[in-house]
Image (cartoon, rainbow, N blue to C red):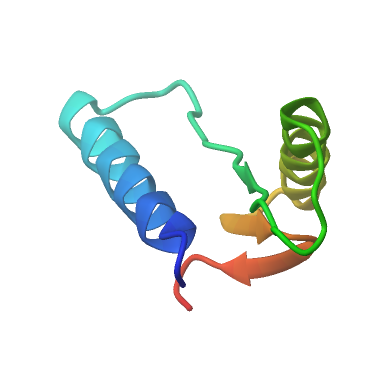
Length: 79
């Protein structure tokens, strides 16, 4: 991926797992991420781009599984 969003997501997930393991945490912690990329051939404002990412984050959160929602499609973290 050119934007590196999946790689960043994997690093965040690994760090969260390590943190939870080191603390024997009883509080459930999770990360919800939505990634949107700027497409020069489909220009939009930063507010529109952030709204897209926010929508994708809530989509992922609703799926209740560890995955990244990127540009409208779900990418499992083990992809």
